[in-house]
Length: 269
Ligand SMILES: Cc1cc2nc3c(=O)[nH]c(=O)nc-3n(C[C@H](O)[C@H](O)[C@H](O)COP(=O)(O)O)c2cc1C
Image 1 (cartoon, protein in one colour):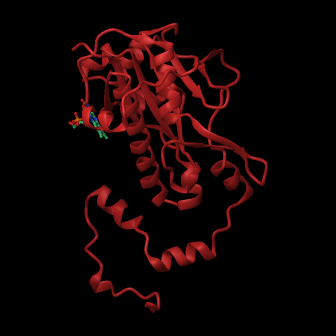
Image 2 (cartoon, protein in one colour):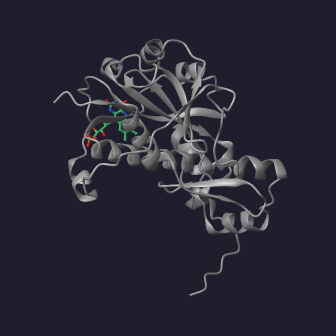
């Protein structure tokens, strides 16, 4: 059936504009057929916007690199892992670099790397990403990972290495970043998912903010499931101090910000 619509909106049908910021944002980032048509007609990105939105991943080659060992995936079936997963906050002790490598590469690493027609290298991942734009970069706060000095690292998916970032002592970063959740201070490692919003907003405008957060949820779930496979304690944590973490990561907290985290450690029970 073909639906005809002249693009006019009956204002009396519009819900009263809500007072909550979240509702205001939600209302103003809705997609509807006419908007989609107009966007498709006028979808012309500048070359800079194209570059930003196709960058795909960040690299810090100027910093010291720690090569990630080959992952050693566990033997549990997906069914077992899905049934068993629960948030674990009773953490004690660390785990090895191979285990961290398995977590990062399986959950967040590239599953295919290829060059686009315009010569840009892109990497697709195990999580679905709106527009295939992959707005997330992965940082790790390592506290007790055997074979890895404590510190702040960026996971470089191209070189399969951790790049050591300049940072304060990691315990200070964790204490200030997760200020009222004391149990986080026992983590062996904390994975921080950092959004470079422009990669998605360049294509989808303000609606892209929603999509970036959906990406973060998908990516975090991958990490939680691989953690379960590795029999680790793991918990998704969004209760962090945005500005403290941004300052420690050296990002502005607006165009680039921590949007989610997964706290990891050996299980105490
Ligand atoms: C987006 C998100 C943010 C969360 N933030 C926190 C947090 O800050 N602290 C915490 O202890 N748990 C946090 N959790 C974990 C939830 O409390 C937990 O998933 C929920 O209670 C369900 O329990 P389960 O994971 O064991 O199934 C978060 C979960 C999600 C999905």
